[in-house]
Length: 77
Image 1 (cartoon, rainbow, N blue to C red):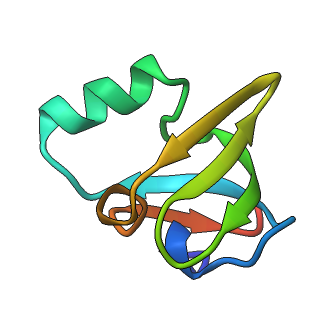
Image 2 (cartoon, one colour):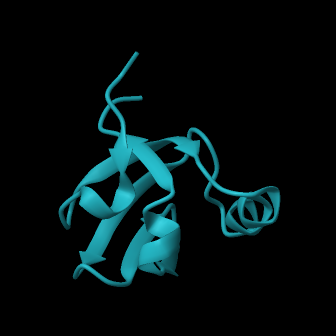
């Protein structure tokens, strides 16, 4: 299995794939509404140790640290 790590641990300008979301169902549904689900391809635009700004296709999404820690990602699809 591929190595996964929390989204918050990746540097700016990284490109990652979502592998798992370790959260309750309500949060997973909200993330899906933002276009973030298992298999999603994200670019990290800002990571200042607090809030993160991500690019998902043509969308820009801001996530708080607590949510970003629950999204496990990998560099490979």
